[in-house]
Length: 287
Image 1 (cartoon, rainbow, N blue to C red):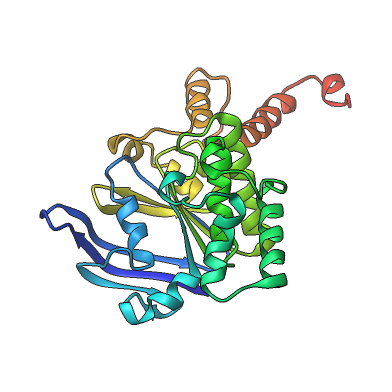
Image 2: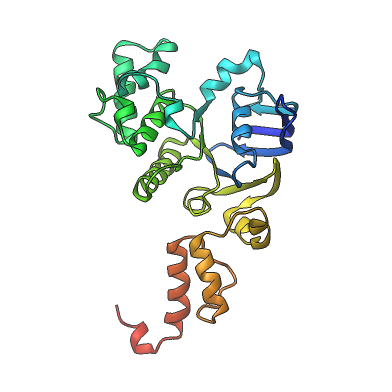
């Protein structure tokens, strides 16, 4: 089922800067989609068009068939949950509990139903016991999870995240990637995220839209996109580090594969496949 469709979408800011040019995209239920591009590519602008924070200059955007127009904003914003790059732009209540309860109360949730929703959400994001803590005293990773929890509490069908791992340390980024994967897998929520961090994309995305200077230059699954090494580098990005290492090993004759691995797991399988097949029988038979 198609959830978001953009057709011929362009956006020009009031100062005349054109941020998006003739964007066409389609996102289906249950997908994990990355909008990948360098800083200034137009990723954040595109995301703000999905729920009416900005209005397209030309073209149309629909969410579950509803045109993104003022009369549909209320319904669309229950479908599309937005998590901003900087959680401090999103968090404004004095406790974690109040933060999560805010949106729920605005749609009439109260009493036992409210408490159950707060408990459920805190369990999902791994913040049970944080109810009385002040959001602005938490670590960057914890703030990200509180912002995510405040959106998840509304049970959106689509979760849109702008640079979800920005400012996180490696462990925090890894935990968030795992959490987003489980939210997609176990709750059936469609995940769309913008990033310039090529290393996280193969870990989370099934499909990629590659954005540069406001235009989509490529779209496809992760292996298809990263196979276009020249285009990736032309727009000031790079291959994932694992793929770049494999590229060097292939150049040096250590491996022979044409399909570059994008994750450590893929690289391990390729290495074992090529080297165990060439090993003496006694070695390959060892457990």
